Length: 490
Image (tube, rainbow, N blue to C red):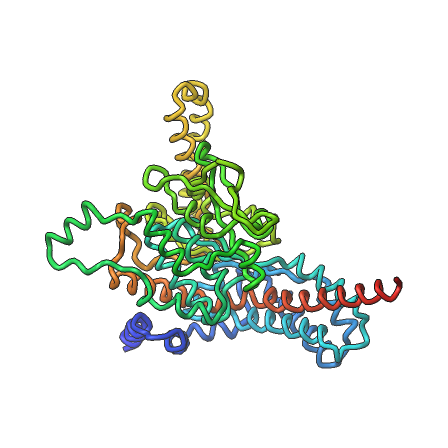
């Protein structure tokens, strides 16, 4: 009876029509299985629960007493996402929904304490002291980014993931994407919240007719109808306004990052965004990111000059998909935006069968498997170094070898990795048109794959989502005060 009940709840969760329905069923599952009791107990070997409990109780007492100076001092002692090991994946696999109540309550208390100190009603702490605290807290805590892998026409899975995050107000402001991921991310970063609802409607997506028979299905599998560069451009013109990266960021507050590479040297990529290339037009950048070598022609990027006119970016240089060398540009995002927490939507059909959405388990078999793969990768790289000089005599082979090494050496996961529920997708269809039914199915799969991760994302990003608007508001007030004083002095 017990197992039957759990199986029925699992089936109901798979068939849930919305996240709210799924969440309610997940909580019922935890109650039926008894794992809700695990949530209510502090103790765990996976994090320093005693330290977190002490800090939580201390913060609550100080905020209740209104001891603002002591509250500020206590928060200053440490605000970071993995305090005491709270960010461990092991703490999010026990239950269907959420994690330890202690972790959730601690994060919510820190966010509430930060908001309390930011309030104008707290006037016993100087504005400058508050600003200094918010700057340092934001720097130390870091930020979250959402990265989408190269995907081709599996981009509709990304679209479902973005929709699920956006509806729960959990979509980070820092976004990166390659190929199909660049298309989804660019539209999301250039569109206001009101405009995004149209983008999330699958009826607006160009789909092909459903195969009418077995022969059509076989033909579609063996010789799929490939998307052309012209058709990609038509989709860009339909969904993406002709903005530069800077114009899009100023319009929505979201920062898009697109990886491209010079056509002559595929092993190196460039990350285009509002900081490194503010005047580059996003349409051409996305088109270049979809220009998979051998299938689409290289693209000439365009930029807005000081007269507001279009001109070529870097002269006659042409650009192609940069995902071969940097599909998920984590290091560059960390350097540019202070990102230290990564949410990844991974749809690379050659990668997803071999990765898991969980961190590596601390058991003997997992350790041996990880060591074996690491050793094999090291030997392959060493062999390539030895053969570097002979391969230089044949540039075409060396270029292919460098691209393969770059693909092998990349990391394809983040702190939270969202994977398709279907592990195996036909890689030969990655650049082919999808039917309307497939588009709807991929979007639905993206949403459903995201639902189990939403509460973890909410908890792990709550403090940064609280700090960012407070710091922005205080910085604007600081500029206003500083500018007023400067004018008065003149």
